[in-house]
Length: 255
Image 1 (cartoon, rainbow, N blue to C red):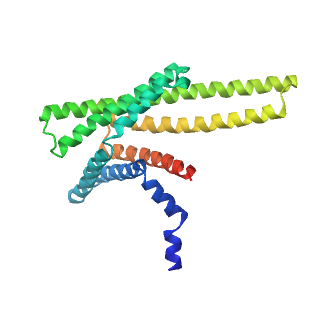
Image 2: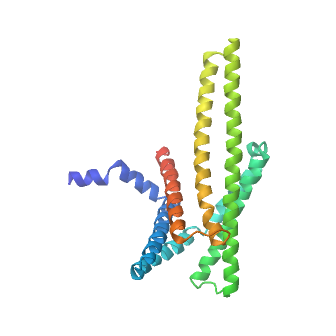
Image 3: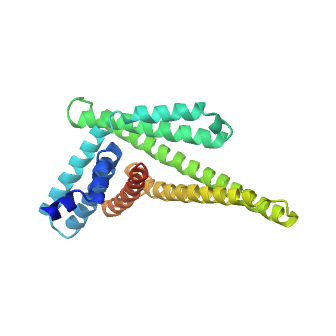
């Protein structure tokens, strides 16, 4: 009984429950399984195991549909974020980052809104003609692609800004040291600022890598590039795990 209690009340189990209590935590978990199922179905079909592959294809389709249901009201969150970015005094001093941030959120809002229509049509709540349903799906993928592209632009602009800030701090530190004006307190403050910049830069690079990988998924769906289901599945698993880790860390820091 004591062993069971230790397992059930283990901090990792508690952290996991908090993680899966969030919509984002559940979504990233389901997404990882969905894309793993996509990869495995492709792998099994390549080796002639069509019956086994059909089970994984069914799981992939069910998870994809379930995730669309979970995201039904997500577009409003993105629209709010876009509006906040347009009104933020801090963002107004960085116009290019501001416009790219607004574009990212509008792209995601458009994608999720149209994706909801695709889902409603798939469950027969809406009965769109096949050609119109296909156009809606293509439009949703274009919005998704645009959202990711703007996110990449935001990351590149932010990295450039952070690099410039770090260089300015380092150069000012050298000047102060040479002129013996800089105090110990000022040097300590600069170290803290440089550490903060380094953390932001690391997080921005992480997001840039995630977006650069995810970009291939809508681009492939739109037939701008060709990648098979195996490669798409691997990309989806990698980016899902990356997003999973980010959310896991957020939950950990919120304790």
